[in-house]
Image (cartoon, rainbow, N blue to C red; front, side, top):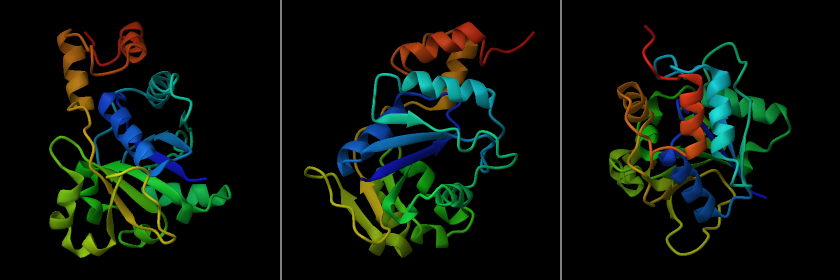
Length: 215
């Protein structure tokens, strides 16, 4: 059983996030994918919506996909949600992290050298890197030449077998050209979100008045 973990701020979750998870799930035949909303992201400004709201929106977005689940692993950490610390918490729960897949977009992975405990964390789990509109995953071989030998192009023809030792698995698949920043901007402008977020997430945002400038 191979499980994926997809961490992020999800402020809010959008179609691009779901496309990344689906691409990883399909390319590697993952049994489950756990979305892990960060309480406090280490490399970004504080989220606009509370952890509780972001967790609720992720849960709504995943309702129709049984293989996708939301985890509260990072909801009450009291500090930044570092990937290496998340792996520590999974290991403490008895998870063999060397048989798990950390999922991320190629745009985020290009800054891997700035992540806490790099490069040691790459020996603790597989990393599945999925293309984003401005950053094709295969391009990372040129962007990060020191890691190129560890990179495997996955999902080009059916399900890709995952090596026994932690590797960087590149998945070149189309993902929606949308960002959480764009979604928040459209909400603030009163513009529709059709096609950018699941309908249940849009309804939740409207119901709770999220991302609207307070008078």
